[in-house]
Length: 367
Image 1 (cartoon, rainbow, N blue to C red):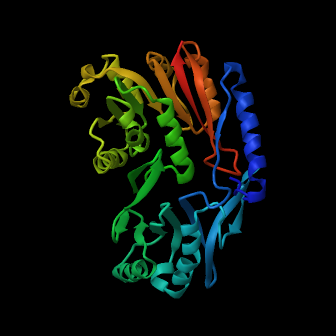
Image 2 (image 1 turned 120 degrees about the vertical axis):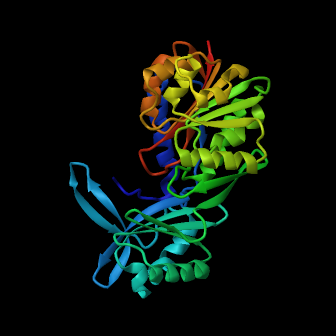
Image 3 (image 1 turned 180 degrees about the horizontal axis):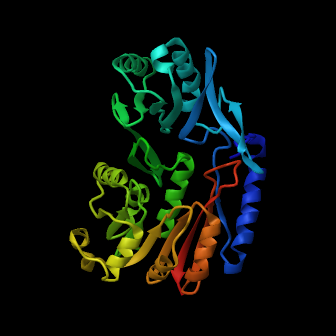
């Protein structure tokens, strides 16, 4: 992949290009004017990962530039600082490198470093090795934790050592509210927290006036949208397949005093079958689907989008909020959804500046 070339002076130019592409891609659906939500022009990612490249007695953070014409041809790019990464990550990078260089136990066969940080500066650092970890590593890692005021996890093949804890607490400000989120190492979280706040605000805005009825959410992750949207609905039923994310969602409901939401560990496909009466069992019975009155569905699927059956099942809801990290698959899904619904709101969330990636959202109302 190409490493983003961050030039804050060109931010508006790159954003205008994305806006033009998105408006062109969706023009066939006659959407309303595009709402554009900007990112900070630099230091916008709260999580990053780097390879550690060893050259003799030296080591440094690295990424790889891949030749698109020959994917096997990769060029190592040294990174002492990284404008894409948040300020907390950039502050830690040289301090950690100095610690690695000074300690055989910390540097020996160190392969990769992963950062998970928050807007408030809390940092969890995962060190990944091509060797078993030992007590000497743990002793020096604990000293480093205290010196830098961070949390460290060590990983190697079939081994994971959590020294303090394996999550951070993110605080997102949305519409005058502060929401607290447990974000666990090695599970999905939105990388651009500033844009995430704007995305949650948009989702709250497009679903106002729904308090008398219920929301169903597919691919809910750690409850990122669920927590922010719960007040807009009578009840919320969220589904997620990842066991770790389901556990975090339950924690986040409790921490944020969300008493009208529940999460079920189930894939979107299984949930569709349950709604259609094609799937039973304990988990389906616990959801008590007969007690819900769904008016709205929110979906934030993987890059592959939704399959045809899921699109047809979603067509039964009055309102669809579709958040997409791949506008092309969203446009494909809209060829089905547009038969029963029209686009009422249309948004661009610039989660990934200076890359070809684009996050967008549509709110669809039944015709």
